[in-house]
Length: 286
Image (cartoon, rainbow, N blue to C red; front, side):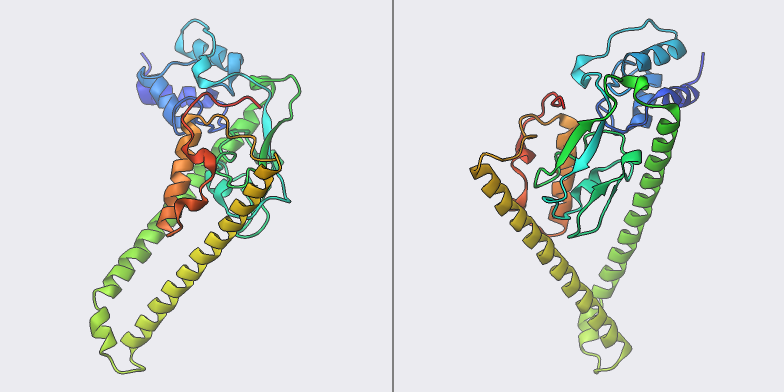
């Protein structure tokens, strides 16, 4: 019998690598491992569709079964499109994209690189101004008729690169935090140093960094407040958000993560979009 790690590799190679989390797992790899271990069924991947189930059933030596409707429906592959007129440059969609298919900078308009987008939907819900739409681009083609093995391989590579980048950034942040804590432990002694000393200069640098971070938080808060005001105005005109009727558990997790990031930055939750508290439900059809 094929051992679990090797089987997981074979299964992962057959998944579309959209990293959409609709299967109930954080990414394609954890889902592949769960199938190999027998803790997940092989019919939980809507992007792979019926053809994907056939591929997995063949490797597993199992019968072909229908897609589990609890995980979604097979559909034409969509593309995320950002309304440039409404984008406020909050970067929440950048943080949500599992394959780094969105480019932009804080307070600047973002855009989706069409060739890189996997149609995962994960950027939609975190957007505080509801400026992202999922537009079908493959006609009637669904599943592997709407997606190629080359696209899947490239998406997996970008996802792995993103995970590696996030790990580096996390480790760098932890290093900076440790350095600040070490510096603060000698803050009282530093204040007693005469002006112009090395310790005093270090303290001045730390103070400037803290002030810069506070200014950054204030700028983000102001941008989100403007977006909230714009959203209220659109709602009053009957042009409010259209993607808040139902939010899946997977998307809710993305919203919660974004809210946690805002809290770490010291930004209040008043700017959170109304759908951030919506109960989990079946993902809406686009």
